[in-house]
Structure formats: C-alpha cells, structure tokens
Amino acid sequence: MGLRRLDLRGFAGDRRELVARLPRPVDEQDRSSDAVAAILADVRANGDEALRRLTASFDHVELDELRVPASEISAALGRIPSELQEALDVAHDRILAYHAHEAGEAPDDFTNGGITVRHLIRPVTRAGCYAPGGRARYPSTVLMCAVPAQVAGVAEIVLCVPPGPDGRIDDATLAAAAVAGVSEVYSVGGAQAIAAMAYGTDTIGAVDVIVGPGNRYVAEAKRQVSGVVGVASAFAGPSEVVVIAGPDTPPEFAAIDLVVQAEHGPDGLAWLITWSEEVADRVDLAVDRIVAGSPRRVDLEATLGAGGYAVLVDNSRQACAVANVVAPEHLEILTKNAGSLLANIESAGAVFLGVNAPASVGDYLAGPNHVLPTNRTARFASALRVDDFRKHIHAVSMDDEAVRTLGPFVVTLAETEGLPAHALSVRLRWPT
Image (spheres, rainbow, N blue to C red):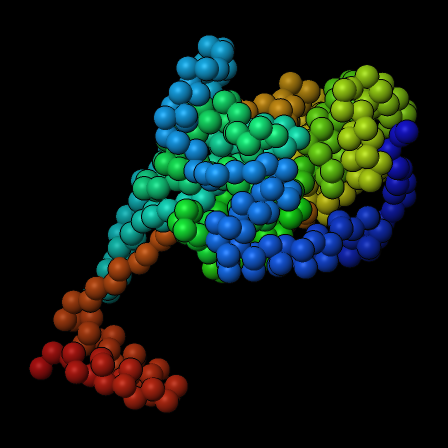
C-alpha cells in the first residue's frame, strides 16, 4: 500500500508557503455539524427518551436504565484479572502523583500600594468525562480524565461511555471508574452523551466542564456546546502521530509507532518525516508487513490510506518546521540525541524523545495526560490538566490610603469614559 509521499527537499519558502503546501486537515465541522446539531437539539428537547432512541439507533442496544448501578461498578473490581487491577492501581497512582505535583500551591497574595489581590482557586462542582467505546475499550482514558478532576477537588465526576453490543459497559472500564472515584457512570455515547452532559436530562445532571477524546461527532458536539459548558483540551478528536526519523532510526520502531495511532480508528493521521529516502523506503515496507499481519488490517489500511504520509525533507531542522505546521497530537523524535531537536519544537500535544519512549508509554502511565489537542489545535492548546477543572478568582481589597491616593485616577478614567456612577462610587469612599 505505502504512505503517500511528499518531497520537500530544497524547499526554502516561508511558513505561510509551507502551510499552503502541506495537506490540510479535513474540516470536521463541515463534515458533521448538521448531524451533530440535530442530535444536540433532539437530546435537549427530549432528554432520556432521545438518549434511549439514539442509543438504539447508533449502538443497536435497547436500554431500560441509563445509569450503571454503583454495585456493578464496585463489583467490577472483583471480576477483572489481578494483573489488570494492579496495572490500574499503578497507572492511577502515577497519574495522581504527577497531577498533584502539577497542581502545586496557590500563588502568594500580591500587594502593591495598599491594594491586595488574593488568588483564589476553586474547583468546578461537576465534571463530565467521556471515554470512547465500540471499537475498543479505554480504561486508561477513564483514569486520565477522572484523576486530574479528583486532584482539583471536583465534588461530582460523571462518566459517559457507549454501551457494548450487550448493552453493558465492560468490566475494565467500570473498574477504572471505581479506582478513580467516579461518582456516576452512564451507558451513553456519541454526540448525544455530550448533549446530555451539557444540557442535562431527567437522568443525567448537567455538568460544568466536559473532557475526554472521541470521534469526529463527539469532538464536534463539544465544539457546539462550548460556552454552555467548559470544554477542555481544545479539539480532542481522532488520533494523530508524527514520527521524525533519521538514518540511525530503526525502521521497525518508526513503522510500529505509525501503526499504533492508526489502530485507534478512522480520520486520524500518521506521518513519517525524514531526511533519508532509504529510511522512508524501509519504513514503508515495515508498515506494509505490520498491517498485513494485523487482525485490524482493514481498519488500518483505511486510516493509513487517508491519513498516512512519508515526508522527505533536507535536514532535521526542516523536519521540525514541518512538524510544527502539522501540530500533531503526538510527536515522536526517534533519533540519537533526540533532545537536541526539542528547542525547535513549537507545537505538539506531547513529545516523545528517543527510541525507548514510544507514545504508548504516554497513553498509559508516564504521568502526563493522554487527552491531547488534535486537528492542529496544539498550535494554541495543551494536554488536559488539573487547571481545566478549576477556576481562578482574584479578590481585591484597599486600605484608606490607597483610596485617597489612587481614587482620583479611577475618577479620571471613569469620567473620561462617560461613566459618572463609576466615579462617584470612588468619591463616596474617600476618607474625610
């Protein structure tokens, strides 16, 4: 099959020209906005009835109850293999340790000229987490979404997951919810789950923030409800990877890491960037071998056929420039002295340095979150973090001297803007 090849050797244009020459991501809003808008309106108007009808339509399951009983969630811990329980605990503890460190202490109060500003950090009350289902199960995503909410101090953590063919959520996912202290779990997936968490239904209470990755319909739904609720980590949609490889990169390592992201399903991208035509050829052959032997061959071929590229460049610096324009969810630098290229990286959700650090480690227990910006939103967005579940409030106080010395400036500005009540509010407070 092979990756579509782009030859940028000898290119010396500016960034705008580079953007124009590279394939642009599909505008997911154009592709799915009408369908998602109809689902959002349906759930907003019809609540649980719409959820059951849409679940039957999209997931082919008839459900009487949407909420998974708490007893079933806790019982899942006893039904999973002990090695899975241990892995969940280890991953949970490592993610917890990282996010607790990230949260840190509240900044010191700021005092200047009689005005004191206190920095208050408050968690949202209710957080909604989405974990994909259907093609695979993702207990790791449950941990990645719920743990930073837990560290932030969120009182109620809600999880929505598409039900399996039998109408149930698998034990590994429920067990992860139990480990992470999730308050409520609902058997609802897709754009309808995002609508339910944003607007609320008879069964599912509305949340303040929605986090978690999903397919293009889930991502589009989050975009449409943004503003009604907080939506973290920008456009967390289909999976992406860019692999930078040099002459010293083992081709099978680059190949398997390209396939790893394609394994997540359709609409993703898997790009190889190299300054060695021989490396491009060898990685191409290795990708074909891996795909041919995979039980997911059809899905992999579809994903790589639409979003797989091998890009030839002149040198490592140009490779970084191309990667910055792509702004991928995952960026792997599989070269010796990979850290030396890090200074050239400006836009990526997460970077993995050297042949011993595949993105799969970040997916599970490196510590930082695996809910990452996609669709070029890494240009301005970051990984999911504790702050996505918190609000920062400043509290201002003034002493008498500050009112006397600084008040006149406030009056001047207020009167300049034609706001006499603003000016009077300060005049009335001048000490006599």
